[in-house]
Length: 258
Image (cartoon, rainbow, N blue to C red; front, top):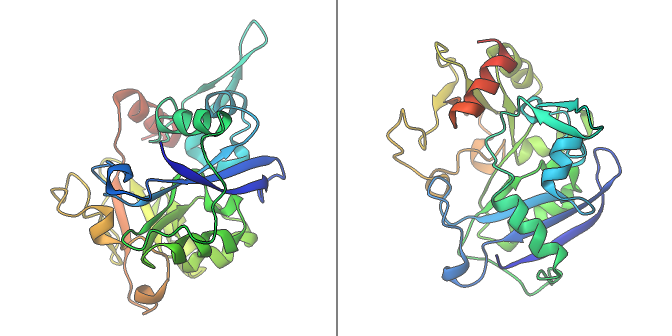
């Protein structure tokens, strides 16, 4: 998976070592084949010293995902090892995150240099990891290297993430949580449970099954925080019903007791 190292250094979440990598840029043959997002430049944030699989199973993924409730619960096994239970994050770490990490370890990603651009693509912040883990300037730079358009989300509720409201949607899982973030000036991307309904200031994600997958993230680009096109006071937020494999949905239901 062709790509570049964007950042190596301490996580802004806990100070532990992380790496930020961008992939899916360059020739069209290297663009992302993700049917939902379209060919966006994909940004990944990973622990730089342990594999994503290990990080998820011992809790070290907090460095890149913060306190996100979808991370699951760490349980100690009889043999002294640990494992993750009830993980409901939609990202399957055994696939792309594992492959990106392995390519990084194998030295296949060069540093991102000033001349690298993806002017015909928007930027996805992030395919895995939370942009609050890296310096704000990094996210701004990545957007500027593309066509100036982007999508992005954060689960972070800490004050240091406040500048990110211009770039990212606040990921929430209830109407109460959404209302709290709206009052703080955020637009939200809310995951709904069965039986939930849209709030007055929300629309259903156009890439959702309920909307007939009529748009990709690349053609929609509504999930761009309070950035230029969303500064008006009536800018809507986005919602989608929780979805995923039966096991992930089972974990999601147990997590939120629905």
